Image 1 (cartoon, rainbow, N blue to C red):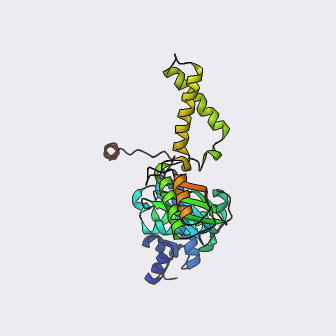
Image 2 (cartoon, rainbow, N blue to C red):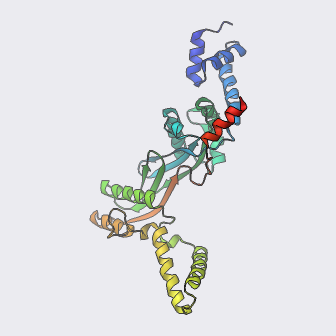
Image 3 (cartoon, rainbow, N blue to C red):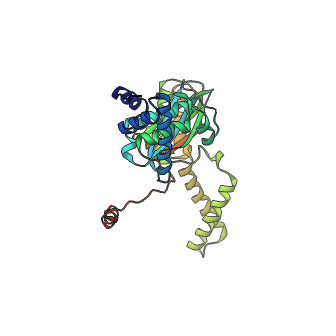
Length: 308
């Protein structure tokens, strides 16, 4: 069968693959468009496997909120910041976070195995592999979380174009623009100050005992002459200081240093006749905990010259 320019164009628009790759796929499959798409998918998968060893530590975090009651957050990684800003990559991540919001998958493996909402003939993993082949970088759907609050609302905040994403859920009997603005400010606080817990109630006794042990050793080393009862008071003071840093509600509110976050939330609740309690937050930062590959440009050029 003769392969026409129109057929190549159509296949290219369907798959995003290169012109010569499309022509080869159509030739190999005797002009069968569906078979050619499958051919390219298989070829794309082979390319993706070669790229899988490369470190994907850039990327973006995206969030979606539905009816103020539920939300999803996802981190998808790329190898470079350039790709992270690419419209095609951004659109893919948008599809991923919307699917996460509607999914019942409990973990990444289950999510990757479910049908891709945009084309249920594929799995999420298939869609990712195709995107890797099209974009030409290793990509990774790293993590996601869903948050819901039936007796209140959920708000989201994205910082730095997707560098950091935050969800905050609060139980409140009043949901209006002022309440949502308050929670958005709390989300900004979380993005900036990186708390680990909502309140001291969430801090485990195991964590407290561990920190006390460390602080006791530090205090005794710094003040060997002080009696145990003084050392004990010093430890309590230092532990309280640490808790004020890691517990959201104890933190100094960054937009008004006269208030803690708890007092700011109470103030806005009172002004709106509401009973409001921050119940949960999720904070994702792109590339958090991923070891980035350090590139040495001069070394790379030297290697290329030596290889010629």
